Amino acid sequence: MEEITNNKQELLSSEEEYCENLYKNTTTRRSDGRFEVKIPMKPNFEQNLGASKQQAIAQFKQLEKRLNKQQELSESYKTFIDEYLNLGHMKRCTMPQEPSCFLPHHGVYKSESTTTKLRVVFNASAKTTTGYTLNQLMESGANLQQDLQTLLLGWRTYQYVYTADIEKFYRQINIQEADQHLQKIV
Image (tube, rainbow, N blue to C red; front, side, top):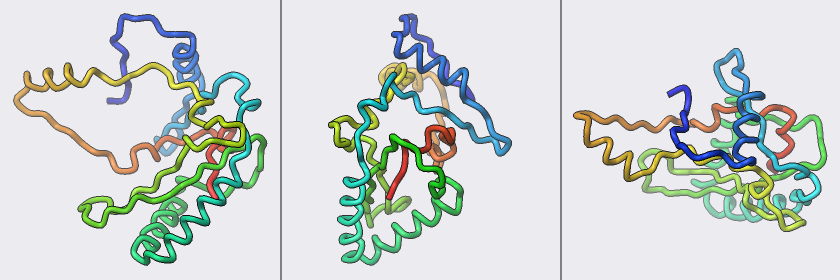
């Protein structure tokens, strides 16, 4: 589906309405077909967003120790980061802006997995020096998920049901350049 419709009869809160309007008014589609969105930050988030670079560096050093001990994980992690760069899903920061947010990252490695052995997690729930996380300073918007029980019961009315997993789905949505300083990594 190209669009998600909200069939709920309830009214949106002011925060949910803010998110709806933000996405309606600022989301663009690039010439390559990918969407570009703004991050729905809460008002005056800059005052609450503390420093995060030192924590991200410390976690990266821990990650390096782990990678030095586990060769297969190390190779997979390097391949992942190279692919991320080569596909244009991240780029080197050339315009520093404050406040900025550095996301700690680590890998979850499952050697028995038949599809994706390594999943890299970018942690926007890591606390900054003020005790706030990036996730806490973002608006969450309305819940667009359908009720699972209703969805499963609805499936029973069809003879065939299809499911799919779109590879790199969330990486197909770009963050507008003005907000990219909120998703840095070391």
